[in-house]
Length: 77
Image 1: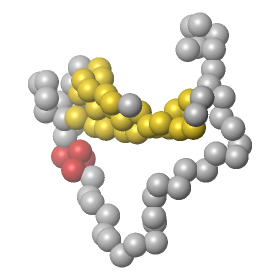
Image 2 (image 1 turned 90 degrees about the horizontal axis):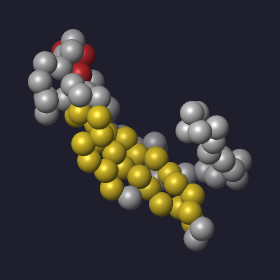
Image 3 (image 1 turned 30 degrees about the vertical axis):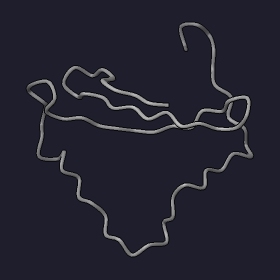
Image 4 (image 1 turned 180 degrees about the vertical axis):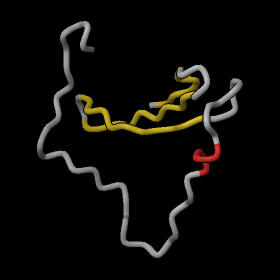
């Protein structure tokens, strides 16, 4: 996007209501601290989601990245 000179628009009124932080569940430990650097494909994957504004509301983009090759190996909208 930087190379093309374009940028996303974030509307100030957007506030995602998808996480309930008022729960009694314990946090999961970060297991990646044991890995210094992945040594092969499919050893460590990370995932993330983001919100995309479309004409009729919002949709979600979920991605999975392989840390060894630093590429997206799966996604879904």
